[in-house]
Amino acid sequence: MLLADLARRWTLAAMAREINVSVSHLNRLFRAETGLAPLRFLREARLRRAADLLRNSFLSVKEIRCRAGLWDKSAFIRDFKKNFGLTPTEYRNQTGENPPSEFDNLAEGKGA
Image (cartoon, rainbow, N blue to C red):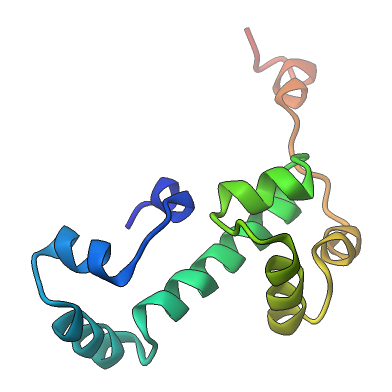
């Protein structure tokens, strides 16, 4: 699954169709490989993607939530805090990293 696919509204049936197996076979395969159910794995991948974007972009929290495929604002905040111990905004503020700007390359003489 590509990062761009994270925002897609996946169902177990759609995942199974993508790889041409039954839903029950997908569940068995996925749990055997990852120890997680496919939809739980997907939710955790989405949360990791959101955390990465919070650290490395200037996108709004809403835009990050949508790009990561986390459509429900309340569930996003609850799940993010459960996984990372902070709300998305707190996480962004505590990472303290300044994401690279497109203007950084110009300032260093590497741009157009």
